[in-house]
Image (tube, rainbow, N blue to C red):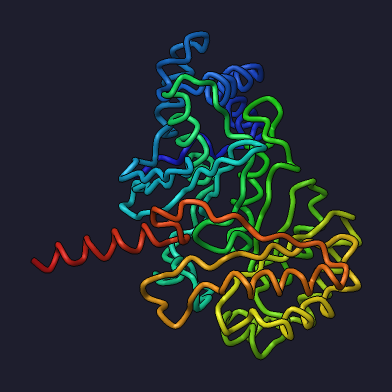
Length: 358
């Protein structure tokens, strides 16, 4: 039977587990240091942890459950990792370089059931949730790759925007956040972490009640139900009106800014009229709102969509600004590799299937 990842335990969970198995409470801090500060890859490397405790951990947990299947590196420094899990499934993780630091985009599910019609992630349906350990281990594997370069680079930001819907894996997401945010370990500040959702309404309320400083982004992509339902099937069951009420609750409860993600699709959602509709939709929230306009990364399987013209993006931006909406245009990264989320994974699975037919 496959052992769970040691990275799946929060500090409090690790402490309780060690005490329950006859170890002293202080062992938790020692183990935590070796995992997240010294970043060892084998329990045998925990030199100040006694042999019996190391054996106990090794008998119950794995420290490496992800294998690097392949890695792509862009001219701009973006690195895309394709990881193979213990059960053979493939997931993607991306490292992006910005002026403010290094940000990792993590995956939360194997596949995705949200079904956004423009997205490569949804080409393969969800087969399972990732464990909290598998999510944390994505960060650790990227950090290990940076450590090998011996230039003291450190992951400083996290975006939970990879394959899958994070709020559809809520419990494991919360444990992941508590692990990476813990100041005894990786100490990645909550305000340097952003979780993105396609709009699972009840979980937006629950997330607001967590009393976290973690940022929230909402994949909106359209300002009205007709258009949003056309490109995002989740809108059929969770339409814009109750979604905006959930956003209002989040803003009132947390007093934190929300980011509206908006992928620009040529001739679909990029007109000045659509921009005005978006401005009207969120005008009562504009003090704590930011719209992130995202140039579309074309996906081979979604030939009906093209990236908006630069002039259309600028006109959309200008309309929002004139309405007092804070907004920006995301700078494209990794354009010379499989940049679209889920694209590298879907291509590899397609190759594997073609090989199997031979």
